[in-house]
Length: 321
Length: 81
Image 1 (tube, helix red, strand yellow):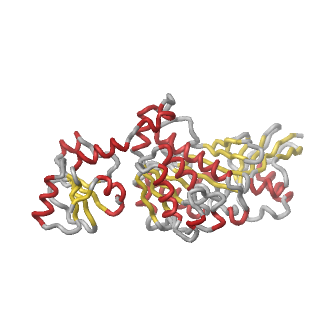
Image 2 (cartoon, chains in turn green, yellow; image 1 turned 90 degrees about the vertical axis):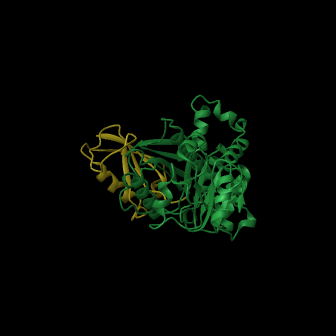
Image 3 (cartoon, chains in turn brown, orange; image 1 turned 60 degrees about the vertical axis):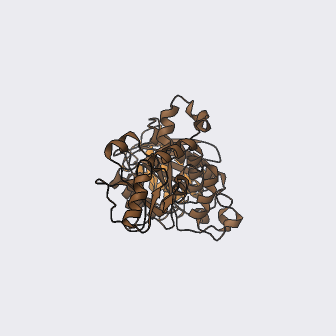
């Protein structure tokens, strides 16, 4: 069985990709945007689930599958070469020209963004604008985590979900909207809440984790996994007209545990306290901005600081942690 | 006497009905004493809500003596997202 690069890109979550090429070819022709397992001796690893084998031109792997009568195994049509061509065809870099001409970004910054993975925990008021802005800016891969469904009362502040999505899973609705903005970003969805069991594995493979949740318990969990994996956390929280943003756990900088006394108490949800849709969109975009700066290595950021924004007076305070 | 400005955020702002207060009192008052005063002014609306304290835009240990001209912020955790 064979699979094209586009089919693989669109169905990336279904497969484990195994690179059977020798080291010299792997180094000379890297396959950007693809997580692979290396087959050191060129043999097929014994893995559960569907696999895609990749050689340089797609001929060797096609032969391997036929000779060994391998089940659930696909050969990448045209091999690594066709994947690299597919990626470059999708990369019309003029799309990003208005941000790459910024002296702090340039093509180097854009490439960093396109090779980065960000986890967004929560696809509600904050998670929608964060994901939308990151995909619009050309992030390489987004991992969306939420077990919730779309409700009618979400729509006034969550622009990735529409009336037809009410009753469907937020991650599915968000994935569909985001794919229309930028089909090159790889989107992985986790149709579940972040918890003790799945959290560490999700966060450890990311460059940044965005806290876009609506409860303190999950914020504490993200904080713990962020510390353990050394993956920085961009915290965002809301109360009525006010929002907070901080970059936490960056190379040992303070985390959520240091930001608020443990165990923090109080703090109403948007459902209890009320919120106007623009506020989470402003705060979510500040979180996305901080994530982009972290990925690009721009040092003027909110590491070790808490930003408090008031949407009523438009005043901001930055507190040193 | 010393004069201190208090910045009120989130639930503190709603509990006190203002985003800023100026108070005068004798020297020697600490942040935890000021927090107690704020909680009394809130008439129970801040019960069960933990607060972090910053002086002049910097987090401090809770028990710090205030000096004239300090700007004190009481910051609660916010849950919404």
